[in-house]
Image (cartoon, one colour):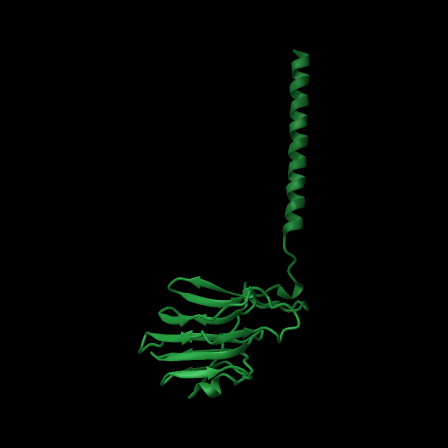
Length: 196
């Protein structure tokens, strides 16, 4: 009987010791996990700004949508250094050789045909965006007489860099593509001529 009592006493002591250790660990965890509020925040309403002396870190802002400058004719749209847009009023044939393309160029076909010929001098930020138009949901992009000129780059162009973005329902006469250029199609959404 005595040994059973000692055994029960020993188990009770072990239980008390373990419980004390668990409480100590919980207390240590709580102390370490409690945020250190600056002294300046004492007495402020919850959510009030506090001067901490630390640099302010803000959420990254999404990139702004390009603001397009509207042009009356395609001849002034393409060489413009900014993001530009033009709505065609008739069929156009444009020789691209020597035209320095940069920025986004939005061409709204409005039921017409645009034929781009000669050399499209590819640059890192130039993108031709071809849209059918709202009033006339058709149009044709004729690239059969165009060649992509990649000679302006001293280094390799990043993969999947868009060169021409074509919205659905635009009929396309495609050029011969060099091995550095490919077409990616997202049916009923977008066709992209891009760098590999």
